[in-house]
Image 1 (tube, rainbow, N blue to C red):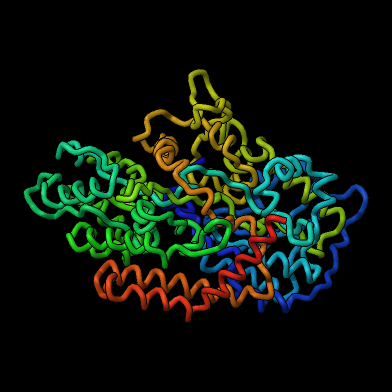
Image 2 (image 1 turned 180 degrees about the vertical axis):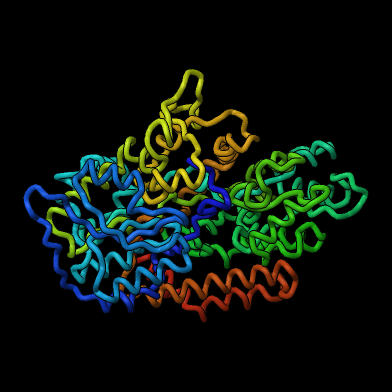
Length: 559
């Protein structure tokens, strides 16, 4: 797989606040007529005519794409395409307007980091009769999909609506480094120059960052070093907070909420003593001038400017999903090779956590509508079943064998040492890839075993071995999540009647937590004198009702 770099869906930031599924599209969805006229293409012996709405990349033409032609031939399908861009600021509105018009297609194929149906959408369209149930089609024509449902309880929970039916399929993605998103990357060349070890505790971290500030590790004789930075998307708070209290915030999924399970009860972390202690520690770094002034407010491009500045290296450490976010690969001075992941820090009371994020986005990227004829339904499900096979994943994601991927050669090593090598990604140019592969549109069964079986170069500091670098770095974080506290948003089906209310409540709570965290860290609020009023402020945001709604939805998953 291509590494998740800035040119890729860099953090796949989708607002999957599952229980708080953004209800902005619901008003449009209710306009959609619940009746549909299936395409009259059940003619014996003819191809299944399937109209499709999909997102295509810049320079890509799904109508002429080689993988499209491969699928049309293999499953006797004739596609007609209606497309939008892979711009997440444009695609959702295009889909919602299409649904509201009533002139929607037979099938939707979507990319989760761009836009997809959330669980509330799925339930709404199912009740309207727009989304077709897939259970019988899967049992009869899709053995590979059925196998995943039968063997992966998390995926089964994601696809099965409260009425027991399956109305759409989300992509299954188990990319290890994305499942542990809150990482910190440190310049280990600077550590060596200053005779320091990788920090293990919060106390160690303070000493290292202080040395970065005062020890002139870039050797230019100036106090121009930036010990620690970040950006407004990948905030550095979760990494440090996990040394005091488990912090489930996942910017990669657009989730800022601190919702957890506390002995089976839905709760939040942001009003607990551990949260307060974490803020005190981060404030101590801020007060000492160890955190860049723009670390909480600048955009990713500004962070990259700090990492890629001309002249001596300035950046000592940064919070990011991966280092190519803040430093470009192949730098002439080799600075892109200088950053290694800092293991989860141990705090003064022994906390040593890492944020965990389930790899898949709940809802549906594949959906059949009531416009699809029986012939089209069968052909479409067979086609998507193919995307659950290794062959379908390889050809769909990379292009034909020998052109987009190849079989392993003697001596090739799999990304995961516990897996046997399965394939080598030949890394096509963008133009070549656009012509022969569907890429992210076809990512339906990239489980951990499949991802781990990719052949990957062993030089982790060469751009070609970047995926192995991220895989190895994530081993430091794997297992540090508090499994008992994880609120399984991917398993929870929300109450659609409360979707708007809960979405508003979560947005308000998230904003309140973020704004106050920054106020406490930067000193505009005092953690001693203002903390009690901050905690009391949650009452006015409907926290009690919000948690009750989430609890009811969570309890249903245990029945």
